[in-house]
Length: 220
Figure 1: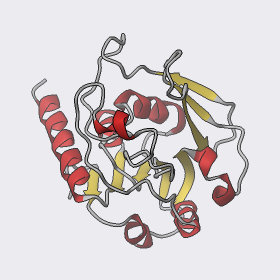
Figure 2 (figure 1 turned 90 degrees about the vertical axis):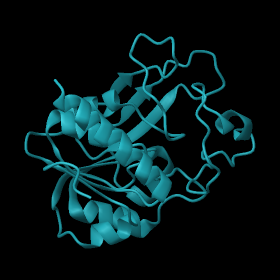
Figure 3 (figure 1 turned 45 degrees about the vertical axis):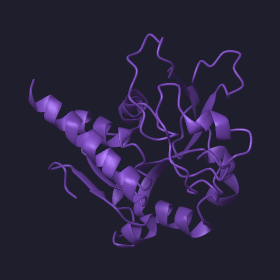
């Protein structure tokens, strides 16, 4: 589905999407693949907590986070993109196989809770490690976002990545759209995005979220 002149999103397997593109077609891939740690709610010590998010969202029981992506996925990702930012890269280094100094740390400011202090993203850039800070809770200083996905990342995080790692005119790829935050960031910053989401329900929810955002932007 082509949502705007620059945003194209399909409901399909990412391997099918990537197979259609030639080598180095995308300047930058920003992806958030499943870590394989059962963060979808099936993880024994997470079942109760992910049954309902802090803002009351009920997440469906699915198995998208049972297994990490295959080696073939990472080979294809590197084939069609010149640079990559991979969330959860610490889980995939045995498949990415290329060391990097340019990691990103998302500091969630969780304090003393039993959740992790943040998340790591591998990047293929020869840059120093960088940190982004963002709170999810409703009392945060930043404006909270409605969550539609259990591993949803904030739009501000993707805008920060685009600002620091993308160049004007870059074609961006996302193989795991999820909540669609990256599409909103790309739309606001006028980047061309090609993305896909396999789960039909998440796809529909993300499309609705993105369309609502685009419509609101047109009002101003």
